Figure 1 (tube, helix red, strand yellow):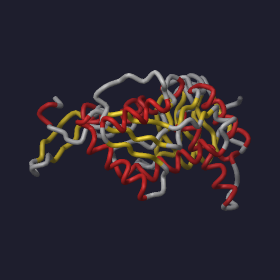
Figure 2 (tube, helix red, strand yellow):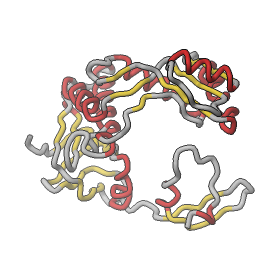
Figure 3 (tube, rainbow, N blue to C red):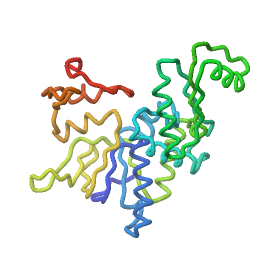
Figure 4 (cartoon, one colour):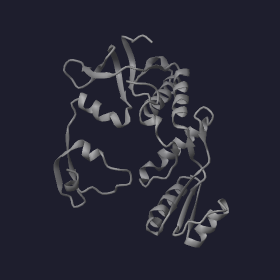
Length: 265
């Protein structure tokens, strides 16, 4: 595919973030009467699903502790359900099987799911939990389980196949996907911070909007844009710790609710 001289929307990354953005943006442009996917190009330094998306576990769930994510995840599950065949999606549900120490948190997740009409069953108590699992798996033997959150929606998708399915959805809307193209830098207009072109190893592409969907490789783009390398963090006592490395801050793992800046050096 020839490198375009100019494009309206340039998306970096041909994984789930970049391709999902391309597909939905193309549909939204058409819906608004503002064009179609031909205004969009996706570039990737390797190929479709060649990064984290291609090796992800593929679990589709709404089982996150952060309440702010609940409705977003419910919407995401609906997208997977919209075309299971194309997305290689298997709607088998999802179960969180937990010990006593996690009961309270899991119960709160169930309450939040109920509040938005997301179907799930919460089983509380060791005997009830054992009987529930035994009814599903007749050889169930695990001890110490005191709660079960059984999401009736969700399931799993075959990682690489699902991303290729997403790429096809985007291409059917007119989106162009240019693989084997590495982003090397950005150009801005008249010394401002507004990006108006992307430099690649195959040439420069002028653009109106840049969307970054590179997942774990965001740090490379961040550095190209010369964004701050440190951050100030206010702890739970209101004290601000200054000049902590940005990427140590971002390297928090899922489920971490508190951050002690002195441990992040």
